Amino acid sequence: METLREEVGLAKDKRSKASPEPHAVLAAAAKGKLPKWAVCGKRRRAHMKRVSDLMGEWAEQLGLDAHEVVRWRAAGLLHDALREAPPRKLRPLVPERRRALPPKAYHGPAAATLLAREGVEDEELLHAIRWHTLGSWKFGRLGRALYAADFLEPGRRSRRRWREGLRDRVSRNLDRVLREIVADKIDYLLRAEMAVSRRTVRFWNSLVDDP
Ligand SMILES: [Fe+2]
Image 1 (cartoon, rainbow, N blue to C red):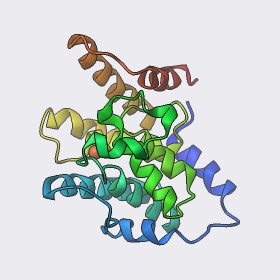
Image 2: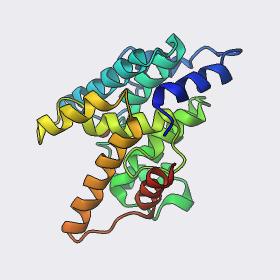
Image 3: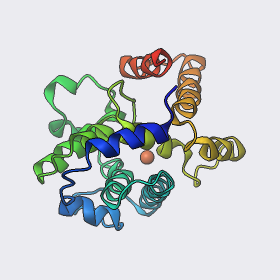
């Protein structure tokens, strides 16, 4: 399997010519500043900051350029910007074709809608935020890292050692770590006799089908 570092090398080549300035909302978020429409209390904000810091750490470990580090940090902070808004308020911000989603997953698409309205055109980042709850078979490197960082940030109290071990392995083999995370989530849902979203199943399949 291609390692994350090799992928990074390829991605760097592709974007070596034009690296546009990050949008002001993303530049601010990379520094820990949330947009004014964010709805989150102190504890949630601390979680978002930890995810952002972890994303920044990983981006730097991977040797990504400063522009990429801003994107990774911004995605980490912004992913839960609307997590505490009531689903009935988020519903109008979720595109109609996606309203069959579980209401707990509305905050990702709703935040992506508001970021796009502010002029953020970074589709990989918007996609990462939109689907960080359920996963996506179309995730790029940023989306996969965000999904993992949300689960592995050091403030999560349960099974600390296990999470720590997974965090240590991310820069060597992100996809292997992701498989363990998604398997754990699906296993939990199956045991609780709860539905598994088709998006999560497709995300899983994309991780195991990858040669
Ligand atoms: Fe989160």
